[in-house]
Image (cartoon, rainbow, N blue to C red; front, side, top):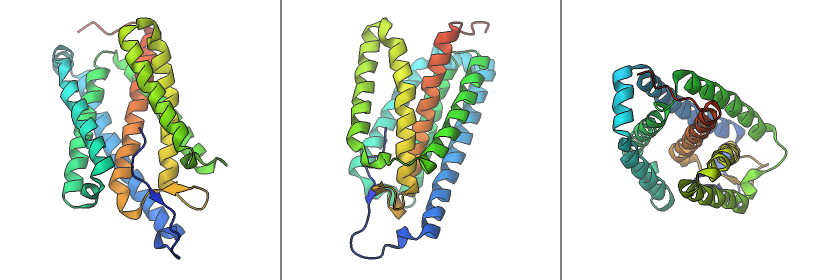
Length: 242
């Protein structure tokens, strides 16, 4: 889900963060952190999927993903109500490391349910889609940051579909399909918050590079997880050769 904290454009005169050079440095810093996080998560997932003992362990003890999800949820609450923690060193770096490790556990526990080929296919589709979304967020004439109510409604619908899918299997495909759409929108929204500039109504503050990188990383990981579920549903053939 999109971050709860984003900066608003200053109305009190010149804002140093309006300087294109400073904004580019901020964008570069955020994308660099996101790239490191995704590289670590991808490596951890690849090890879990390809190393049979670890694969079996995560399949047997699938519930490990539950405390990881709870920790992620708690950190999201902290993003909304304890923003200052993500501006203080070393607390912000500790929270970032915990956040990435929990996501790595979460995505690995899901990935081991599918064959390595399906995981690789989902990874490739996600990479291409994210690249397209980055270009769209940069060059699209529309400002998604001004559509916060629309983003909120998408999130509520996704939650409702998730609850319905838990009780009614028939809703599952609609849930994962809408999940791909929802997180694609979230990525564009959060990317435009990072890019900022005159074209966008809202933007992250200069000191919020950790929150920005964490939220964008979260969006990409969950987009991949929905694509993986969708690819696995279409394939309908788990790897049970272990």
